[in-house]
Length: 96
Image (cartoon, rainbow, N blue to C red; front, side):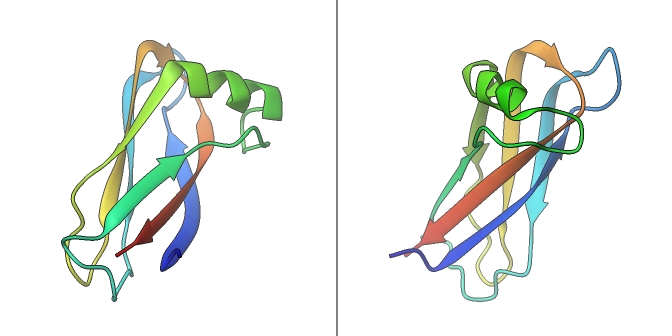
């Protein structure tokens, strides 16, 4: 069962965009250094993209979470071989 869930925005910036972006997740006071963390994008509207855009972004963008810092949180790193622009909504979940 999930202990922590949430969402945030990853921003690849304005045109011409970037290949990498990250989201620092803090305030996770009960997370431990051994917690398992996962991040994902759903096909949903964000500030600068349609649900269809976000669905395609799942093919182009890889998400990886860092090892958590106990009592604090973790970082979600987004990387793509293509330059991406704008913001995408990223959801995350963690458990022990």
